[in-house]
Length: 302
Length: 247
Image (cartoon, rainbow over all chains, first blue to last red; front, side):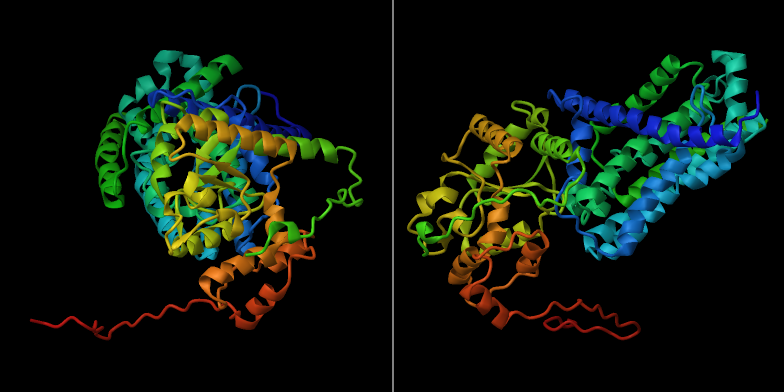
């Protein structure tokens, strides 16, 4: 592979988050459509996610609760924007070779921490309860997630995402992470559900109970920023899973099929479940996926 | 009660001439269109009208295909639905909720009770006409209106937002004195909310001759400055709760 020039890297790093946002909008649409179909509804029109974001940014009142609130939203979006530049997509590698899996793992924790700072300044008790639950949930799903990441890195002998994709594509579907490490792939699905914050691991949003937790004081462009963050979050989780277990994308068509299929799994599960309590969530995520992950790790390291 | 014909009619001026961007009107149209297609509603369900809202939102009538979604906090919402009779105590909460919503905001009164008191006309504890206390954009009459009526009303509101006709939230700033006067008439002259409505009116340059007046002077007289709530923790001391004794 030829070495990229600095200009090319900068162009790709700008292009990749934009691509991610556009795909993320359609993923949000798909999520809402799946929810509607499960509940026997028609669901929103195709451009609904864009209408929502434009409307929120176009509000006349923009209630800020202080500069930490502003920075919190910037961190929440910025963490994912930085993560997108490290996630290789077909034809665009960005800084993926220099970043790697471990930096990426850190990057996707930044949004939760940024949100915690921002919500803290809102001084709304529902927000504080929500964000403390969100950080607890992060602690819960990060354990299986780290086990999965470690197992994949051990199996392929590298943390470089470009090399992981190249190794899987050279071996074909029988060499994909999901065929080589099925137990880790299942544990990864649990972590994915937690990472997306979907039911049954949705206690920190809980609209009927704590009024959407972290989002309770967000209005206008702040809520719009969180809607953008949601697009990027779903995209990041899907692409990361496809990269680790489904061989990344050979071309754009197979790439899009894979990432949309990955998002469809947790969404189809989500809307038929209620939610677990925080302690049950931790108990579940520290029992089954961790046990599956450790077993898978034993097979991989053998 | 002030007669509505006595209120001076404000004539809308053109947008301020500072806007030099040639695409400004295109953006305006885009935002207006998106506002009409994406409405987050906060339903303040006070009475029986609330029963007709779940069918309007769920599988039978599905409001989401029009872009209408329920939201749970006033900060996130665009529309305030008041569905049913409004008692004096409830009205205080509705006004607090309304003032926390971010502009542009719209209020929809559902059921006859919000129009004229409905079957609670003779009740001493019920606010009869909601538009005396809040700027209403749309009434959906009926006892109770069926989901079809609710959705048709919502489509009317969408068309009004699209054409810029639904701008009654500006009226709250322009004629704040009128609304505050009616609120004081019900709640007593020391009524106040944490929101600085007059300051907001100045911020949006919506201050008119009706923004301040005798009622806002009364408000200034009784207004107490907001203070941050302090939290006290007592660690290491035994806390006794009055009324509870060891048995």
